[in-house]
Length: 433
Image 1 (cartoon, helix red, strand yellow):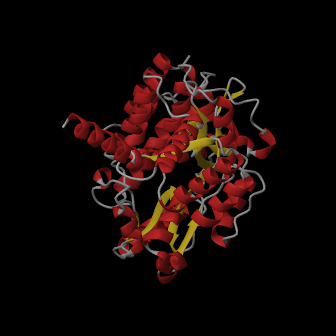
Image 2: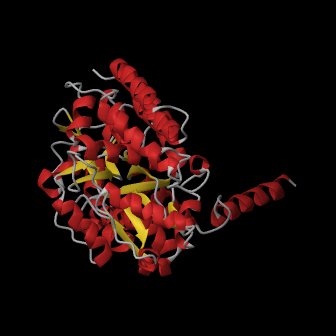
């Protein structure tokens, strides 16, 4: 009996060895799995976070594949995070020194906040400055050091439905008085003049920025931000708020605009359906049109924010934004490889794909859009003498939030322009050095 048990035991061991211990397969396959696991363990891994979906995401993924072809010993883990959740998730990761190797930013004050905390890697030596639009690269350059490479450059324009304009004999306005005439005519014909989605506050903030620039020129913000004489309570900011409230009282916007979110697309639907004739928005609007209502593109045109009587600003002063700006986390264990990935994400090939497939501009020099509509945006940038980045992306976070809050209150007629300007300057004295 003992002999029989010994024989059965030996047979069982042999059977298990033949079948493998991981659910089947030969001994050779098991060894191969082990070798493969060992190879994977030896690979270096980069984490890459971004916020975009659709064609933009595909462009990034293709850039990552090109990077991996050049670096076969590197694996890249990509994480797409919805825009609304991204900033908080990254802030938590930064505070725990657990940020991804490469991450999406917008440059400006939002990025500088992390730079000041020592959380962002200095990529000055890895950056070919001649490869980028200088004004765009400046938005990720602090104290002469580069902390991000911009892929995208957006501008702020006023889109309009040229079919509606033609129907009522209207022309794209160049001056504020001409704009008021357009608004009045549209109201008389029961067309919402301007679609505004200001629940998230940043769409309305473009108006304050644009009015202030047209009144006093781009020097106003630079002086207030750098504490060089003028402040955020300057008369020009008060006047800018008054222009906003004049538009509100003139019924220039859709009812309840301060409670309408942008991302859900309600404002864009007002444009697509002909209920509204204009929208002041970044050129990302064109990409939305291509995805949501491609037939509307035939009706779409745009003009630059109008000039003001006796204003120092002109239409070569353009509201703009960068994003994505690709940055490397200080806590990365592979700064060199992460920097190489950033270079691929801002290469000429990536940039050309980005602009041709998404209707966006890039911050890469000499990348000309193939699409004629997008090329008109490109021409605006080429002729611009100043690109004003959004205040909320340039100012420190605490002051940026107050800027959006007070501007939304101006739109809601809940705060006078004087009160808003006073609050901004008081906070600026606290947080700006």
